[in-house]
Length: 226
Ligand code: BJW
Ligand code: ZN
Image (tube, rainbow, N blue to C red; front, side):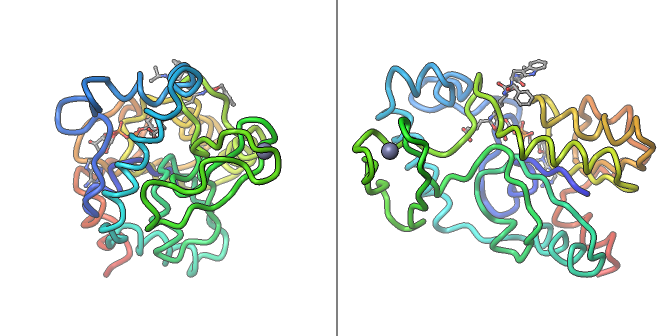
């Protein structure tokens, strides 16, 4: 199985959160503030502006060789789970099917009252509609913000897979955000071989059996002999 983070989409032109020596900032607010449950409760319009801005950036981004390599591993192995923290949808666009998007998807909204989910076309910016057509309440991005809980079923499925996998690829994540960063640790405790692909050191480096200090778009195709 694999766990991916923002770094795998960096070569597609999607900014990371903590890469480049600093933290992403929107209108002077660090993303931990704007991407938080508190901000969604107090100023949902601002949160939507931030996500619509990012949806705009994504409109011109495409999957890169790292996304395609993981899709190929799934096709060739037949038993491969991809867990991504990314909300950009690039893994599915590259052809990966067995994917758990544990932090949600930027092109989906969810009703704050009845929880109904709707897809937002990627090219409709700003997002539309803004209200639930069943109960009339506000729609919010279907994203797991700081201070919110992950979908329990999805995380449970990911952690069960981590207990049973033989090989765990950790690609392009700073491994600072929990519970996602616990998945490679679970896999390690259950005997999996851990490979980290990241140009930088992370807290997971010390539990990795093998570290590949290269950009994912180079390292993953090389691993497949491409
Ligand atoms: C390249 C590259 C290239 C560059 N190739 N690599 C335990 C301890 C401490 C705190 C907590 C804890 N448990 C929970 C918490 C609180 C909190 C948390 O983790 N805080 C820490 C930051 C301190 N967690 C939560 O609030 C979570 N909820 C929760 O825990 O609920 C309870 C629960 C538990 C168990 C089951 C169920 C429920 C929710 C966290 C949700 C985080 N959401 C965000 C924002 C989403 C909204 C948005 O998109 O704005 O998700 S945070 C942000 O970080 C985003 C990312 O998915 C996430 C991870 O970042 P990622 O992907 O690692 O990116 P970067 O930028 O950090 O790193 C990029 C890496 O790429 C770098 O290493 C580069 O070197 C590398 N790179 N170019 C390969 N070409
Ligand atoms: Zn509703």
